Image 1 (cartoon, each protein chain N blue to C red):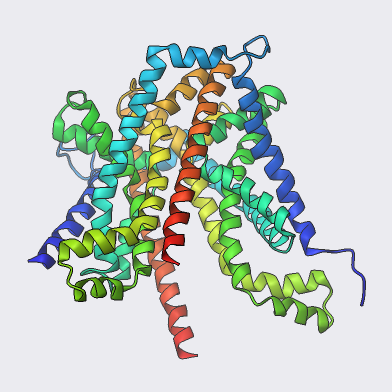
Image 2: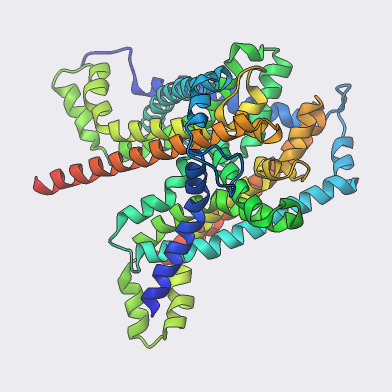
Length: 266
Length: 262
């Protein structure tokens, strides 16, 4: 009986989480413009999604922005974590405190504050993308920092000393010994940065160029508008993103269990 | 010993400069703007105006209520799920955790669009139950973020603690109240921090479902669209104070519970 309750609860919550996305994905393959209205099979939504230039530039723009932001965040966050980890207590404490700020702060406030500072006071043109990229990097880099730090703590500090004794200069020791040890942290930090940038709405609205749209800002504007063709094309987009996310999670898990097996064999 | 000009510590410098320029300085600017009027004079009038205006106070209370209800419901749904995944029937099925947190990676505006379509179909018109629909959408958005940290904390929990409770004569209810719940507090707190503050400011969910409902975040949005930097900064400063207090309080709580265990 108790087992039954557990199964029911798990499946009920899964139904709540997945039903909307799955139903929408189903209707994206029909010509209906409302959920519930039964119409015939159609790929029109997918055709619109990949032919409408506003939609294409929005998708490409979002992805390019996410990659740019993730690369910058990874460089800054990783270097910051290595530097701070080997600095004295006070420097490290100060960096860690400042690092916490964008993480606990509301995105609305982060976006608004950078907008005021860069666009209103320093009069930097929004159209240069500088405010947008900077603001999203300010959100993402702290997460990279946090995912690299535990790897540095886990690493044997003698490895670096050994590399120096064996004739490496500090730069080589860092590049050939320290970096390879913390790669998993860097990779997961990079992935976190990509997903944060893809999901961001608030920072983008306050700092983006007027004519540029990310998926989030585009979707929010589209829900206010009344263009049903765009609305249903976004159903197709959400179906595609769902499939991509599922595939990514499956691949990551297969890889993780493979490497776990390998470690088990050693 | 060969002397080198390179030092690992120097790597922190670009990041430190970045944090000062684009995190600390903008926040100081916002606080400064909050305490000045449109002519640039020091004044508290913005704060006085905020706390003496019925509409803004109402917004503050309303967003607090929405956030509180959302967090409570997320907690009530997610805690059993986290327990079942960590200790219950599904504890050897890691894939299930992935299924529960997977929606985190789908763009939230698209997920809310999907839910909105479903609710519209079920209810005909969303205007009939505005509060309930708001809460459903918020819970739908934040639930995965609550499950993840609670699961992480519950998997670390030692089973023998629960068994010891039972061996020492506690019935199931007593084990739950006196052993399981106290030990889950760090997980619950980190889940709450993932949901409570974002729920207070995430006005897009409301914006997408209804165009007119106001919570704290949307005040900033409306001042932003009317180029009223001073009043927008007041809201930001109030939120900053609130977030700061909340963070200090939760750190204390977590510190206390961990200290108590040692």
